[in-house]
Image (cartoon, chains in turn red, blue):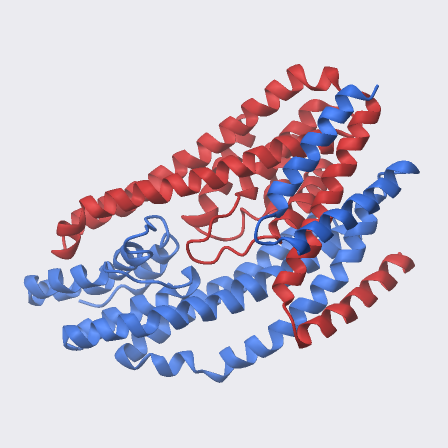
Length: 220
Length: 245
């Protein structure tokens, strides 16, 4: 579990601060968590599911968005820990709450950075190298702690869920939850796709892609 | 003393660590530019501090293209460009570096490769697809970062010409249709793959849930998001799942 915690922290740091190499992308975060836990199937399934949710957001400028990287890591750990046939649904519940918490923590991080930058403004404007390094490395350190805190909170939620919710959930309920989670992810992915493609000639290319995809799915 | 382009390049990977509402990516830009400005210190301490102070001011850019600003602004300081001209350059770069990066990377390179990886996973390629995603994505990512820093440093105050390079326009023209094609191709494959786990009533419920949720997301995109609607759906399903025995 320590490895999963460390991976979630790294993934949290990758999103904004270092090195932005798409480790925070749910597909990658989920596959990594699956590898660590020896449960690649759960890693890929939840990675795909949260990747579809990720399509719903464009991380442009100061926009507010949920953080799906650590959320996917936590969801994979949860699914592995629940050890029930349709654990994906309940793991998605844990993951979505973690994503919301991650998004809120990003806002807090930006506000703390703003306060620190305001306080250091005279030194920055005077070209004080020490103040610049302290401010920047401070932001990096706070983001590392933020990623760790979000992952830890998500894992704690997963443990509470295993303790109190898993025993109360019926087998039919597990399946219903998985259906709801998968349906919501597919819808978010499709809506996000339309937003990315936009209006105009892109829609024709999208239609061509859909035709090819349907044919490929039928042939597979 | 030679400018340390390698050190500036490495620092670019942390450009957004101190992102804030006052200077946006300005502090990160100054942090990355510092190794390039350091040689000025040997000749004139005051000039170095003045240049570093300017480098940390308000700046906006896509993180992968921050290097263009870092290189161009630092080179302008080396060339002895007047401060007011450097300020104009900073202001002129902020908009294009944001919009070009958003269009090429966030709305092009990322969703295209993500969609192809989703399709490959649905086809059963597994972890190799994820590894290929990381390799291909970061080959483009690293090349773009290095190109930005090199173009900025070599052109200085005349860097605007680099942003009008034919390859940027061409990449935008190609990525639009390719992204749409890839996303369209991936969606049916992923939908079928995701539905394979369910049988009978569950599969029908999945199709209805996805269709209704998609309709709601398209109906009120200003209020509803994938996260909000997803949370409502799974919480309702959770309560139903506990009650329905």
